[in-house]
Image (tube, rainbow, N blue to C red):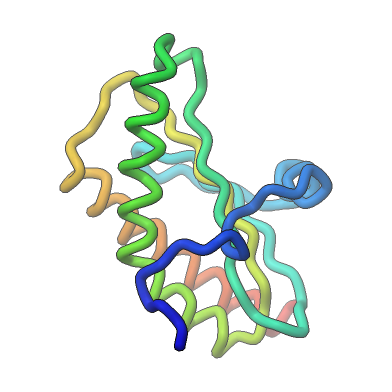
Length: 133
């Protein structure tokens, strides 16, 4: 039985090699409050891995950075099902890096709305680039 709304370890982007490849070879776009890095690759097992980053430049205290990361991960966890469906239909694997780029801690509703837009855009890119990969 799979948990629909979980955020298991397999969906977290932790590999240094994959992270470097994401930031060197991946494409990017801006969608407030995120700078989104995206790398679409061909895969035997379609899936999506996520990296969330909040810089010290914007939030000096670790407490604030951790709060923002929790908000972003929760918003992704609840809206990822549509993205996973699109990725499975396209038959690709996606690495996504979300970099939070604003100096204010947004409310959960604002983060969730932005996350839905990001998920939709990433899903569109995945389905378009499935033919190119």
